[in-house]
Image 1: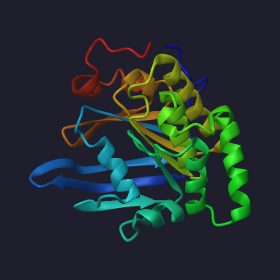
Image 2: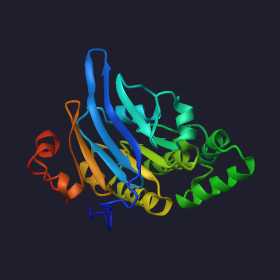
Image 3: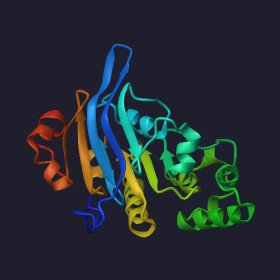
Image 4: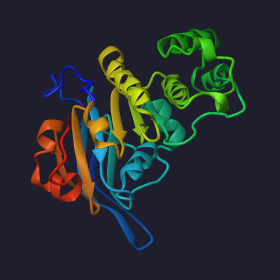
Length: 258
């Protein structure tokens, strides 16, 4: 598959950190998941996370959204400690959107009904709700399927719907959990182009975790590798695949981007 990004942002003019993990540790019972990890996501980046199953990628998303809390350490959004903010306040105060790996929509409601339902939750001004719905229908080319129940949509249409739902509140940060899983090649390419477009046109900071390493590296600016509860490497895609720690922990010797 061709590289999706025509350019990569190697340095950011303002270098504003939008998300920061400081000495974060988390355990489930006696099982250690994250061990004193530190990393930053800068404003405007497309940031990727890679690693084996169970390494803590989705856990990091749950920590950002407030579904779970760390045992030790702090999670900062826009420089503010989020530990006192529950899920709904993080969404509204820090403008974080989340696209789960599975579901994220109402099966027995039409695509349009899904958009209306979420708009009533996140948009206080009634007059602006339909305007936002129309914008998202047009942006994702969903007008011709808006009256179809979500359960009857194709895999690509469902993924577009869930992303549209997550964008209803005009987030500054978008979290995409395993977004390329179980999708065909053309749908993955379409999704990569959507992700890059959101960065370029909407200036949204995007964080993706996935097992599809090539698909993820084709559209991110920076990625990190998680292994054995730690961050073992973090760099641009071209540098990351050459990193000896990344090779040993995840890629192996024969992996190439193209």
